[in-house]
Image 1 (cartoon, rainbow, N blue to C red):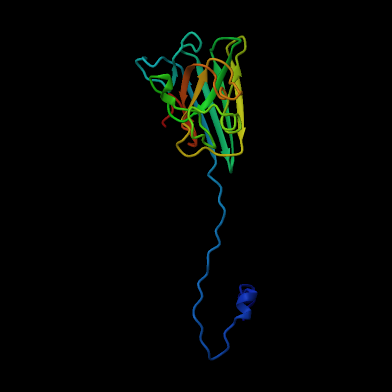
Image 2 (cartoon, rainbow, N blue to C red):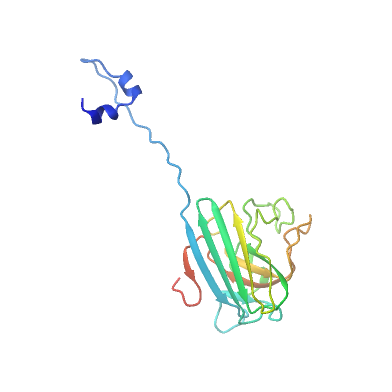
Length: 212
C-alpha cells in the first residue's frame, strides 16, 4: 500500500475492510453538498427624464415636470455580493432644496405612474399596497429618500443583508415627499412624480448609449 492510498483510506473504510477470500456489495459515495453564494452583481444605470409622450422613449419618465424637470438626470448603482446588497442613487437637475421619497418598485416604468407596481419587499406583505410597518420599512424595502441642494443635486445609499429575487425589482420611483413610517401610512410618500427602469441583478452598464 502506498502513502497516497493510505491517506485516501478513511477510518470507516479501514475498519470495514473485507477479509481475503470474501466478497462484499459495492458501496456508493454520497456527495456532500457545497454551499454556494449568489453570483456577484455590479450594475450602473443612468438616464435622462422625459415625459411619457416624448417622441424618443426614455428609460427615465417624468409624470410631473414642475417637480422633476424634463432633462434632469438620474443614475442608480447596485453592488451585490454573497447575501449583501447596496443600492446607490444620484440625481441632478431637480427642484432645489426639496425632499423627495424614492423606493425600488417591482415593475418597469410605463406611461402611467402606477405601472411600476408596488414597492419591492424582501418579505412580502399579502396586502398590497403595504402600509404595515412590519413590512413597509427601510430594512425590508429599499428606501432612497433624498433632499436636493441649491443646485438640484442629491445622492442616497441603502444597504441590506439580502439579495433581490431575480426579475422582481425593476425600477426606482421618485415621490413627492419623504416616506412615512406610522401604521396605516408606512411606506407612503405621496404622488409618483417620476420613474426610472433599472435591471437589478444584471451586471453591466445600462443607459441610452449602452448596448444592453
